[in-house]
Length: 162
Ligand code: ATP
Ligand code: MG
Image 1 (tube, protein in one colour):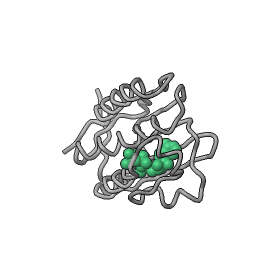
Image 2: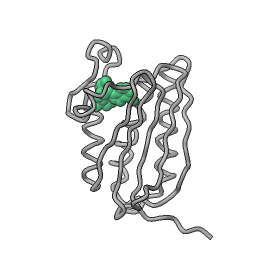
Image 3: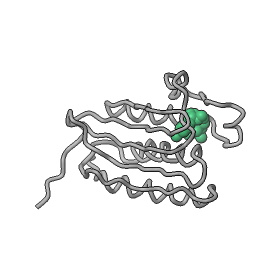
Image 4: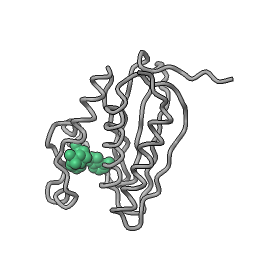
């Protein structure tokens, strides 16, 4: 199934707007970055679940009023990636290799308040791998994080307009 990347983005951005309005004070400034629009080959419900897991993490772990940006962009190798950037607390380098393990949470006492189970990123990784891709993370403690679901060129088709 070939899916419009913009349609996926619109869906998860709306969902994240609802989440931040429900749980953050003040709400986050969430922006859809429409850097590119293309077709993605995959299972729509799985891709949506991966994307919304990344966005809900950004909303849950970034203090209210923070900035969150999300979008799809093409990669130089012809692949595509969905990215989420936040201005949250960031994650220390020592934790990065284990983040996508099931039940792994960075700060157990602090994350108890935010109430997750530690499965979200394991699901994101699973979905990425089922689509021939992977999850990438860049993070700077005190500044924020960027998570990406990277898909290979075989899963991406540029939109031809005009
Ligand atoms: P669940 O997703 O199952 O509700 P969870 O959010 O704790 O629970 P993951 O989504 O797998 O589980 O995330 C694992 C851990 O990574 C989180 O507990 C949190 O410590 C850290 N983390 C994830 N995303 C971010 C982020 N954007 N900023 C800071 N820390 C993050
Ligand atoms: Mg999560």
